[in-house]
Length: 388
Image (cartoon, rainbow, N blue to C red):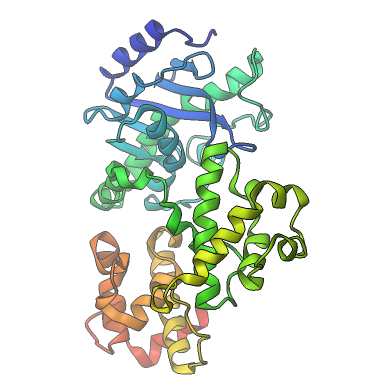
């Protein structure tokens, strides 16, 4: 089957897709040597027998896909949608709308929300996908018949999978919860790049750094992000986290002292030495109150730890008894924040929406020692703790 590789053919497919009630979408890309993923193929399926591959290498302008991506009347079905939507948003400049994520829906249907598409299709529809082409270079041309078939199979069965999951969610009366969760894909900010000045929070190995050290990390990480975008290389190819943290800790003041740091390559010093030293100087000049906050080492608190363990046990018990994937509901950090701050926790997902209805309200009542949830604390709380 030939790929769509002309503007007219792309527009014709988009026009047909806009008339369909739902459309399956996927992407194939390479993301090993560049800052942004290099898109190779976009798959679009109008039905099981009406699936198409768009050649993103041959077509320099994929913006017509934006009309489909942002259309409010056509459901776009994807599996593990956020990364694909981020890529499509970037190449079309269109905000996604009316998205159905089969991975997300599986979490409400009594299945795991971390299942791969292959495992989900096998579980729900008894369909076995071939995984022989998982390491394909999707930028090479021509692609083999086996590679093209593999790409088509990733969308071919998504409409049937959606129907299966919707039926299961309907039986469990969770359509409202699913709709709320899927609505987050309609928010454009979800796909925005992080501002460079916020990238320091993602640097690994900063656990023992001071606030002054972290100010230097912030300056270095922001510069690294901009440079990685400019040269289109992975950020760690510009400067690794290990070197970044070491520079922040040792604070070199000259090219000679920078060269003495372990792991700093001669090429790095030659190309970026002056910029790195400049970032160190900028970090040292920042007022103390403007340096990033560093949490002091937590003091042992057996009572608080026990409350957190109780809350986690309650979360696990509720999820096990209802078939909701625990990873859909809350992280341990969110539970810890609820235990510590209650409803005053800013932005805690357990304090609003379906998560509050499903768990947050009852968990707060439990932590406050109320009996509104119908739990005999003397009888059941030890059992919940045992589940931990």
